[in-house]
Image (cartoon, rainbow, N blue to C red; front, side, top):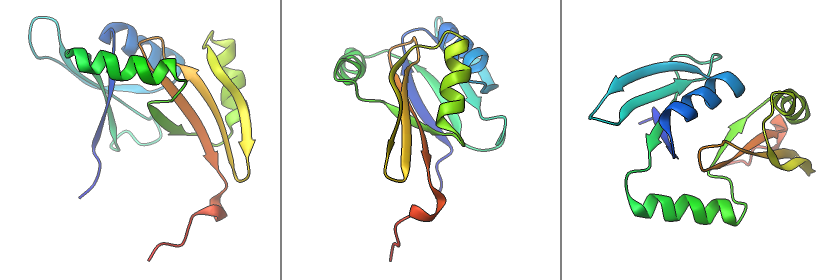
Length: 137
């Protein structure tokens, strides 16, 4: 078993596609109409084009709006994206006009920053030092 798709609930699929590709640097993978106003819309990392797809999922249920709005209001990121250098990504994305709710912060072996994806979510960028993985049975 493996993860192949993760969903990010978005307010507007077209705006989400633009942000996730033009700002964050993901590339479009699948774009198929599935009804009058919705699409099966995925993006992938250019570093792993056959890897996990991010589904830019339209918020179609009121509970989805309540859930993501509550997370955002409390400053809680919906998802995390791994990066090699949080400060470099923060600098690059800031120059592109991306709004951050948390500047790069180091907590022991982990450095994070939190950005607003413009479509209803906070996303955390994270880098974890390689030798800090816990030993699991």
